[in-house]
Image 1 (cartoon, rainbow over the protein chains, first blue to last red):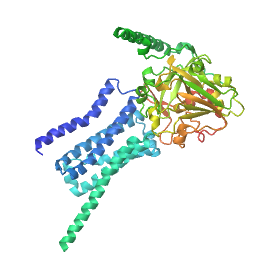
Image 2: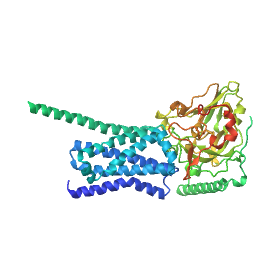
Image 3: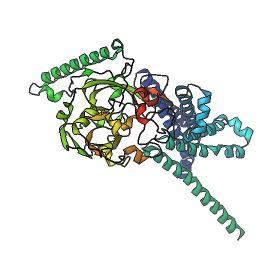
Image 4: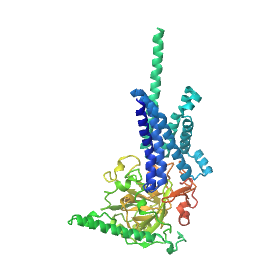
Length: 208
Length: 317
């Protein structure tokens, strides 16, 4: 993939990732957020955090399946946008739901499992966002950096659990997200088993 | 039974009236405009068939109304929990358009002297229709102020003369897969049923409701007839009723069957008893930015608290 194409594609991905927040801003200024605007903003930013988180998790399986190595260059971008929406989502909660009442927030995190799960998901994303630069990789060393960034799996699981637990009755959407997450994580497990076996067999055949 | 009336209703403070009349003017204007358009377009089409306006109702004021400013009509008719249409709150407004609320009958049975089937028009004329502006608190943590139209359910019950076996009243919503598309999905055990203890059903605040903002109920708000119990969470106020039964057992209720640990039979608004998954201490009034504290019995404690004397409301949530 020529460099110019990558740049162009990155611009497109940027623009796409900014669409949901732009739409929210437009709706907010045109009285289009419905009867309960703050709830709408909370729901929308939450959904997009999960969509983008699942998208980043889909990138390396996509590379494995298609053999297109350049797709990996979009993983950080999409991951950072997931964090961006996660921050917006957290802000709507801290501000419009709790009005920065620390006592209430702490009580909520402690008492409500779905809030605990949501806070966990966001907290796990934080070190990943902070160490997303090339300099951090050098500083941590590739191996350690990679191990740290496996936290994204835990974050995504916590995020889907958070969504699952807050829904009143109709679980269709969390179920779809859980199914996607399970298949993305399942792919990695199977991929690992298969490649481990391949290494073993090649080692055995070399011995012979 | 002693029922105290609310003390805070200087009629000068009923600010809703102007808003109300403005809306009526607007609706009349809109209807006339629509009719004009229709006749201009093709003269042989009768305006009444093209203008889908709700029928105006003749009503009287009620001292049981709150003086708070009603939530705009637009929000009351676009932000609905009506799972028979959709689990999406913005779904029912659109999906209920073709709902047929006429002809409609309500069948009354069980422990009453006179078992009877009412035509909706006859039922509506059974007592004087009143404007009742009530606070409405959803179990999800949002609230509205809604100018309902109806009469106290006790008017109907008194006429039916329930026998001594009547301990509870059970209400049933229409079951019709053609009209209620989401009844195909198993999200709740259809048809939706609800129930009240006899003294709750007889309480003057319990409203047999036919209208909203001075007109017949829009489909998405439970046309043609629903119950409104303002001191309980919204889901107790069952919509589109076809059956009322007087029974000697606690009736099964839709949400209680779906999640008994989350939704009790009583489901009185209570800021001190949280939903297992979220707090009920505060609420967001639709149209307001800050959250407001939720009031015990949704602010109707003076009138209804005595119904629950000696009951542990943490246990009977």
